[in-house]
Length: 188
Image (cartoon, rainbow, N blue to C red; front, top):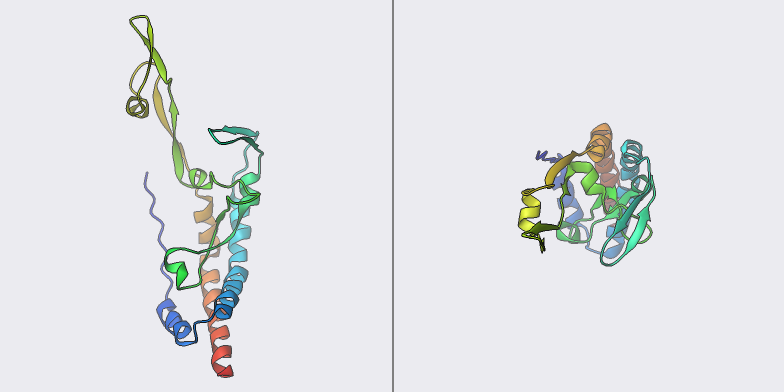
C-alpha cells in the first residue's frame, strides 16, 4: 500500500519572494524558525495525542547496541525538527515528527506511520543432513519451509494530526511570517 501525502501551501511563493528581498542574515532565519516552531506546536500536540502506545517494552538488539524501548517512547519523541538539508538550507523549514537523536528513541516512527514488513523465517536449514545458511534473497521472498513475509499496517498518526490542524497552522504561519516581514520592512 503506497499512500502518498502531499501538501501545497497557497501564497507561499509570494511570501518567499518577500523574505528573499530582505537582507539574508542569520538573525532573520532564527527568528522565522522561532515563529514556525510556535505555529507547529499545535500539530505536535495533535501528533502526540494520535501516536500509538505499546502495551509492553520491546528489546532492540543489533550489532552496535542492545536496549529496551519503553512504552510511550514514540509519543515522547514527537517534536519540532529544524530542517538542515535540501531546500531548508535556503528557506527556514521545520518538520513535526519523531526525533531520534540524543535522548529520543523515535527512530521507528516511520515504520509505525506507514507500516512495515515482518520477516518470520530461519536463517539456516538442513539439507542432506548438513546445516546450511539461507541467502538473504530467499529469506526476503519468504520461500522455503517455515518462512513467511507479512505486512503490519501503519497507523498514519502524523497524517491525522496534520489533517486536524492543517488549515489553521498554514494560515497562522503565513500571517505571523508576513507580520514579521512587514515589521522588518518598516524598520528599513
